[in-house]
Image (tube, rainbow, N blue to C red):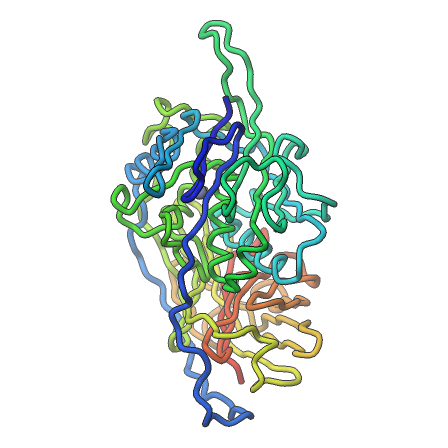
Length: 448
Ligand SMILES: [Zn+2]
């Protein structure tokens, strides 16, 4: 019996491994527009100066992680709504190697942009050599049992796929397909690894909702199921608000919440392909360092940084989400430039800092991200703009970028991956991550 999990409004148990989930719609909760008196041409913003800090902190403990992963490993039963309950086989199961994500070819630019950013947020919680890549398109959405080994297919079909036996009205689901072996001694089938998965997002629902932020949160939630975190953690079980609560999707702007980030990191770097509930312990996670070191840049209300814990450098960004899409912002035309800074760590934890400049042609939605004057600093020192560091490599990294909706991603240039999102009601800011084998960084910039 493969795992079963479903959602909020599903009324019947599904036969195979479908995780159905969904978030109740929540309004964006922000006023639209900035009033009718604003000028069409906006004056340049006065740029606040970039403030860089290096702080010690305390992150999730191994006991927190054992409890959190234990909920996912418990098999449930989970409940949602008034009358729906389901359970699945206990235990944690993960891919043996980094899976590759494939998008169904009919996905819109907007759906693709959200999907790329969702994968980027999960990658920020994983070491670079575990990063999930996005492959070429697949022609149609397949049931998870038909997905090839090591793949996760993501689609936004209109309505539910034919095989989906859940209750109509479901908005999103993830299916897992596992390898199994027959255990002669116990006379039962045992899971031995995660083989393939899919994520189904109901286009009809998400189009009508028209909220990229909510779509992103739901997609990340389903991707976490697809990667092996099967449970739904209620806030009464775990105090930190997180993306596993029903009906209250955590808005994710620039990173997973800490417990999810640590759980996906622990599942993929500390545990084997299968972990039975009784095998999960602080010892099974190996040496666990609760201390964090946070290198952070701040531009007024826009912040970005890299948190180091347990050998992982995890980039994040934070700010206010825009109220419209970049291309719909009538106040901006031509090529728009944002200027700011970058902070990051090398694999040996030397801080790196530099300048960041992003420009986007609003006609084509293509542009460039340039990181210049890159300098490295001795371990545990705070980078100070302009003095004391030594040039890092040749001091410059350049990327071609593409923008869709509120998200950007690199499409070419130097080695590495850039992903980001715009901030500020009128696109005053942009922030994101730059990840490569020799640098994990985050950047933030304000519009000139
Ligand atoms: Zn779910």
